[in-house]
Length: 391
Image (cartoon, rainbow, N blue to C red; front, top):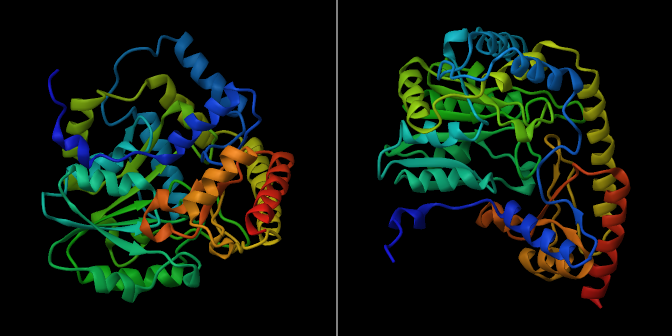
């Protein structure tokens, strides 16, 4: 049997999908499982978006299209970002891909040489580190701490910048913690980055999911950083379109042709009917979206209150996304043990914080993209198991 490529050893995965597979296997045996592990809205895509895609298919939008995206979507994305981020965005700077995740790979592959350092949030989305290693880069974790509400300080960033730093990855609001970078923090971060010649990848896919009066602020709006920032967004979270696979980014001029070339070499283009659904999402009514966001906020309040009532558990109030990141160190067990026992013995699927990096030890990630009734049931199941473990 021929050997596999050794480069695969550098390629990680997403534990959420592994836990989903284990949870589905348990369900196949007849056990009830409450799914709090997957970061996916439990709402259907709004009907007007679905109809836009269906009409596009009926109208024959079933062929290849320009690799960077169709003009109608690039214009809609530029208009949306100009309004929502307070920036002047040109449609020519927008590039579209099947999902937002390709920009993590393409952005890193287009900028990072073997041995280059990339600073990334930890705990953070696991594909950051995976893509850095795949490109031969050196991952440099930037710890997100509970003491800073799962943000970091400008000094934390400054201490990790070296002449080898080629890229800094920022994620606000953040997965898995629900933390966010305030405008005041971004002002300080921008001052640090203004003096260092590196690319910035700003992952902003949760930008419209902010709670408790928090407001989104993009690093690209500070200190002229737009000219070297990959500003990444997508449709999966805001518009409940995870399965549609549709993302986009604002790219600095030097990166547009190289990343378009990577698209041509890998996926050719993004399905035009899907892109027209994206146009409908950005330009159409937002009644369903607003109702979904209100429900997520209601669940956030309930899940934080419930988690803080559990033995050995404390949970800060997340200001963004739809995740809670409770501290379970008071249980006396490591995070993976707690997560495994909750799944196997109580039927509650959550993720260990270590699935998002070494600095996630002592925490769990719960997605409250599930019904309030299921969340409340999960909290009581967790209570019973944690009380048993403490006895």
